[in-house]
Image 1 (cartoon, rainbow, N blue to C red):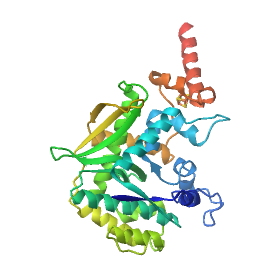
Image 2: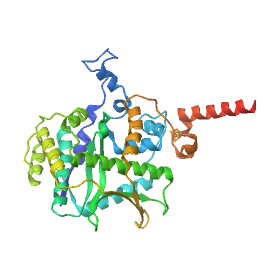
Image 3: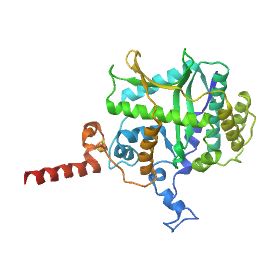
Image 4: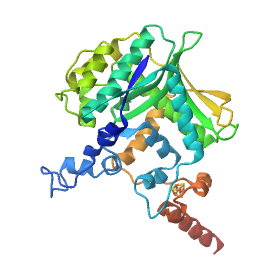
Length: 347
Ligand code: SF4
């Protein structure tokens, strides 16, 4: 089986269709009117640091340290953050796993709608493969507006598969430089990630995600004609459509009316980077109420309803490995609070 992907050049040209969405301080309809709702919305972190929507990985980073995530987008000074050898190796192993189940076909895209069309067509072809009896698919795009809380999220699930007992499982694949159980904080972050994937996927197959929400948050044009190669690739996977809106309609319909079930169980598989030994697979319990509560807190920041937060004192050990530690305002504030408390006690 094959999966479409953007060609490198196209990625540079249109990326994910995102470059053109960066907030402009000169919007003709709102210029000069700070209280205009559209202008106010564009001044929120969701638009200042992202493009009006989030990746699942943003929320994972946020759950580790929100302040660190923000510094990642707006560094507090001249801080060099280099990708570790461990991260590079992890990305390579992920790619190898993906290629075990399908090939990558480069596709030329000429608009942001095309870039999104590639994701939609891949989803359609993966759902079709599962319906035809394939046991496992990898790198599945998901997106949605969880709990209708006004923030749109996109992500990629590592693997969906049917277990021997017929359960529909989500598997997230992690590589580690040491053969050990991750810290509690790391586990919390990873659990949040897979629970959010489940919610996004289930919203799609249960028909909860509406076309209007997608168009509103991604700000894509439903009437945009799809590029030639996209239309051709669509035909290969049994989809005949010429506009982005038509493809979106078909994708949502197909997801909601397929016989693909909601996800039954969540698992995280850990592999040791040196010998690629799969040394542990950990089940994760899905707790919808907790997920909603956590997301609500994180989304409040993105919507500009609260200030950024750093780690609490019990997790101050994270600052020891943080590249922004010397310049971090949150850390300085917390240190000053502790000093003042100690001074107060000693009096
Ligand atoms: Fe977060 Fe600590 Fe880094 Fe500040 S120094 S960004 S609080 S981890």
